[in-house]
Image 1 (cartoon, each protein chain N blue to C red):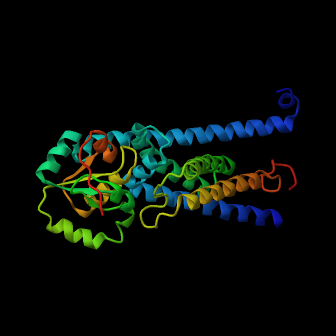
Image 2 (tube, rainbow over the protein chains, first blue to last red):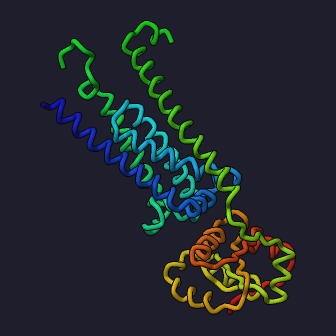
Image 3 (tube, rainbow over the protein chains, first blue to last red):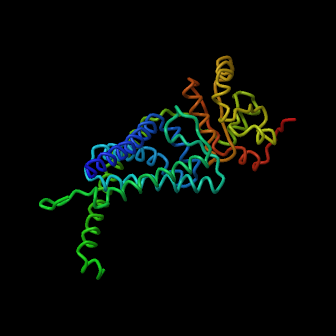
Length: 151
Length: 160
């Protein structure tokens, strides 16, 4: 019973993270130019990369979100989420440390743009959440037992 | 390496991780391909909003033929701006949208030019986007920004 409960809890948490990433991806796809401005303001990449990042990152977010929810190779999907959130964390923290003023349209234009420090903190929390879920998913209790072995 | 080779559990974990990493790599590549196609399509079909060079901007300012909008913070604007430019910090866009809708509806200029501090500040592009979304048909972007204008030695206005 504990095993089943843990699996469901992890699935719910993983799906929540997946839904969040999928929503963020859709929001960025809906407002690509605002997202492009955010990328430019971060001053992290050459100007010519902006279009490609704007077109690719939301799709990667959307695919990762769908992958987390569908549950195929869950630890791999959580690794993808960790890589994405680590990227967001690095971008937001460096912008915050450098004192850059940027409008994070991370969740589209519908929401007010929070301060860079808050964006950095949110990115750190998201990364920690994804990393914790992957650690929990790797625990023997959660991992699927090989056939023929008692759980 | 010797630990990986001799310890079956560690070796199994490493194999698992490699499989996971491969799946993630495939997913990111799968995301990159449509992204590249989208960029190609967007470049081919993007509406052409004029990019304004420094001499062109000078000509427009001298002739008073364009509505010039400064997207920087108001305090920075007050310290110095291009003559006849109006301050419209992008952060205030939402608060002042109605006021600006009315102004833009009544303006007699055929061209609106936006600028910010330098080519990397990003505020001008954001303001350009807002104006285009508002239905302004010709929004020119002065890429160089105020830094390029001042560096060229042109006259600068400051607010009292």
